[in-house]
Length: 93
Image (cartoon, rainbow, N blue to C red):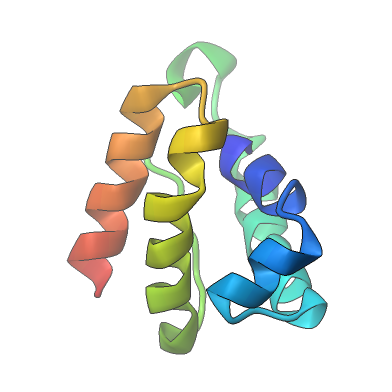
């Protein structure tokens, strides 16, 4: 969820620098929303270390990696979460 909140906080000029439109961001947020609904079935005490499946088109992978490396360190309060996300994105690429 922290990742999705960081996506929401990106101002229009930063979206443009990432090569994204508002529609691109909405599409990515929709992917996170779907995975968040799946996460609601995981017990709260296990959620922090659980792997949550995020299904998104291959074309969104590279922009999401750029975002994670460029913007998430500014917004993430949980470095371990950021490391896990980056590892998974790198493996998927």
